[in-house]
Amino acid sequence: MKTYNSTYVFGITLVATLGGLLFGYDTAVISGAEKAIQAYLIEPLHMGSFAHGATVSSALIGCIIGGLISGFLSNRLGRKTSLLVAGFLFFTSALGSAYPEFLFFEEGKPSTGLLAMFNFYRIWGGIGVGLASAVCPTYIGEIAPAGIRGRLVSFNQFAIIFGMLVVYFVNWGIADGQTLEWINDVGWRYMFASEAIPAGVFFALLFFVPESPRYLALARDEQRALSVLEKINTTKEQAKNILQEITSTIAETTKAKIFSYGKKIIVIGILLSVFQQFVGINVALYYAPRIFESMGVDRDASMLQTIVMGLVNVIFTVLAIVTVDKWGRKPLLITGSIGMAAGMIAIAVLSYFNIISILTLIFIILFTASFMMSWGPICWVYISELFPNKIRGQAVAIAVAAQWAANYLISSTYPGMMEFSSAFTYGFYGVMAIISALFVWKMVPETKGKSLEEIEKIWKK
Image 1: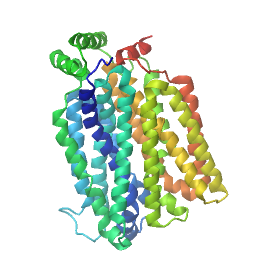
Image 2: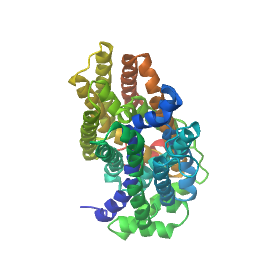
Image 3: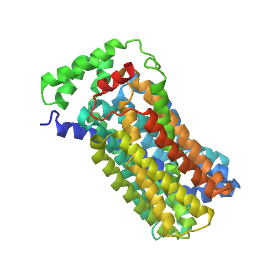
Image 4: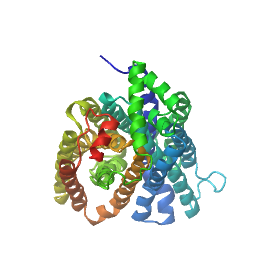
């Protein structure tokens, strides 16, 4: 027998996961446009691989900022208002990135100022991504019943990957049949501008969802918290019991500081985030068309293979959604780490012997599929549920900022590392995958089926 109102819960989750979709859309839109940006802005200014890598990854600077301020905003403004801020940032960044010449520069005349303005708009949108990446899973985790929390938070990862898949199709559709000159001059603008549509929808729908009941309890608005819990749960008695459990943990931790539950919980949150990036997943996502072109595939076919990879990502994220509340978090993470290590080490060996074949594509797919059924969604599940109520906003902000810092480090160093040695580059990611499996095995607790308040008791002990 269900103890929750599934229609209401899934409706709220669907709106919240649009933030995840925009997260994926914004971070992956650059994969189709990065070569055009290089031709339009980088090469005419005679800048090298460092400037190219920094421009491709510039949104990640905003992601770090958004992650860092997410705790402050979500605790002061609430989870819902923080998501509204993220929606506004997504919308304005999409338009600004598409036409960075707005007000200050002349179209068709590259300059360092124009490059800086383009990066500003990407960073501006990145702040929205950083906010959404922290607040969306937190919000979903706080409204979700314990028995399906893993599944609902995993939907956020599905939305991220679906957003990436959608933008792969959008980029391919814009570029299909067009000349390289048109894409380098105009096409990339359409790619960035297309994000304004889902951003506007996300912003509008947020007005129809409630605030998180756990945030309302933290804000001492227990009447509104109870009202939301009554809509989520099937009986008023159940809603009252949950609210009592929430308020008791808040009362016990009124003066809680970030290390009130020890340093280990914060270290685990940071390392989960860092390992999620150090395995090299965003290299595969950001540079996918370029990787396929380096295998000897032409531009249109490389975009098509990127779409195939996106479909594989969606399928294996669904596998995680179906199994996370049945098999548990730890088994999925360890299995995924093993698959990622096998894929990346195999790619490193093929690169060392300069072998370019269908095997390269197979091992890239093995790597990304292993990530999508494990570290992709499960890391966000852990981040949303691992931390006690009182420190959740601060702790999630630290973990998410660490994740985006690691993402920026890995993504921006990729072009330079590849110039040094492709075999070393992919081998490094493979070794990180092995270490991540050992870390989960030794340090990370299983949280399957536990309420957020029950998980809190693990750290009190």
